[in-house]
Image (cartoon, rainbow, N blue to C red; front, top):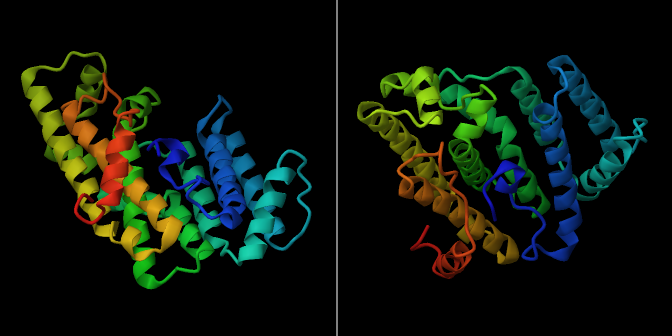
Length: 284
């Protein structure tokens, strides 16, 4: 499973039971569509926020079985409403997603890791929590580990896309981490243009090594969930966890030069991930 955009999260692969593919696809379509409202195209910020408010209104309506009057949104939310009502899904995770997407419209810097974690709590963790609800497995311990996996996946996505986000004048690297490692925005611009000197490059590698290790530790903290969950969901989650860890390996292999090499899973990685999934527990 690629670790990019909303492909960070388990979508309706063949590993999922057939009865759950429709609700998972409905959740994914909602998240992807709302995320695109916040990030894609050239609409002004105020128009994006207004459209996300339309999503909030439609969400509350569809959960009650009330027809969504917005013709463009109606098919998306009719489908989502069926999933919410059929499986008793909580609304708060959907609300959190919309809050995070609205935050993305205007916020382009994060003061420290706690502030970034709060964003991940709303932008990433809700999807894992909804998956556990679908499987009737939303115990406190499972939720904690799911949050660790989803936040780690979000961080990995951020570290993959540093160059893409910089082109949008957005930085997800915590500003206090940058300062501790002697990295500033001028250095980021030099990295983007391929003009890093040896001292700058060493500072950048130090910063990125720290961020990669933090994301890896978080992923490993959540990884036992993939052994605890039964059947196909366990297999699906193993591939998600292992895919995220593989991206971190690739970040290290390119010496953290994300401005010239965006790490991603290649065709040859799938055999490696399949083997690791069979030996899960020793490879995660």
